[in-house]
Amino acid sequence: MIENLEMEARGALEQVMSLQEPLPEAKWFLNCLYRGFSPKLLPREKPEIILLGEDIPWELAKAAGARTRVILGGSLETTRWSDAMLPRDADPISRSACGWLMNPHFNLAENALVLTALTSDSRRKLTGLMRENGVRVMAVDLPPMWDRPAWQAAWVDGMTAQVYCEADIEVAQGVVTLYGYADYVEGREVVDLKTSKDYSPDTRDFSDHWQHRVYPYCLMKSGMVAEVDKFTYLVASCKAGKDGIIDGQLYREPYDITFEACERELREFLEGEFLPWLEDRRAMITDTKIFND
Image (tube, rainbow, N blue to C red; front, side):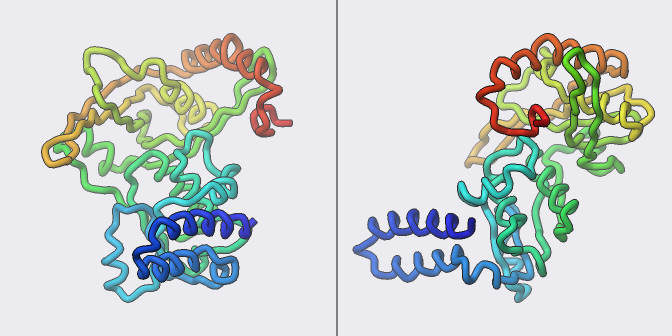
């Protein structure tokens, strides 16, 4: 409930205020923050622009004279509101931010344009979800940091971004629904973006990941794509550079794909490892979507 959000905010602000007694101005500032969580004011707040994340300078929106709200995250309560909407692998910040924009209590985005930058996999998934739910979103790709043909191709050469795919697979235990968002799809190739602190081009670091099996299978099984024969992990190996600037190298980790191999490997993993693992923990799992109860 929205009252829980207010109580959560009040508790955090009162704790901060108790530490700032020598500074009278802090009370005024924290009271202003508290009004941003008021159940009376939130339903009436009608921003014209919502900046999601810190990638786009809020000064630009202010300079345009628009009523602006900046959402950098949320709280435990907003996370609970959005828990059923986002994919299971979405990061906590995206989950909490989603609760601000899509919940049954108030609609901040009713008259607003949401501006965000596609800086992470979770941000791309959140952008797609908001659009599916009628939120007006303008998402921008940040310019590539490396002048390499593979990177340029993945970002600007006409690939379709954030393609949702879903398909069933029959296993010995029953029917399993697989789904996910492929970062980029073009022709018979799928590209998935990854980051790594110490990627080694001499090893196939992502060979034990499942995107190169799940996405091609879902795309072909559902009929969205007639054939996928190539899957590439586009890996940015990032490290802290001088003056805190992120520096790194870009790598391609390609895989040859066939539908038969994807189906066989998925079925073997689900029947032999994953589903037995879930069954052993059925009593501890409360999410009804897992077993379709």
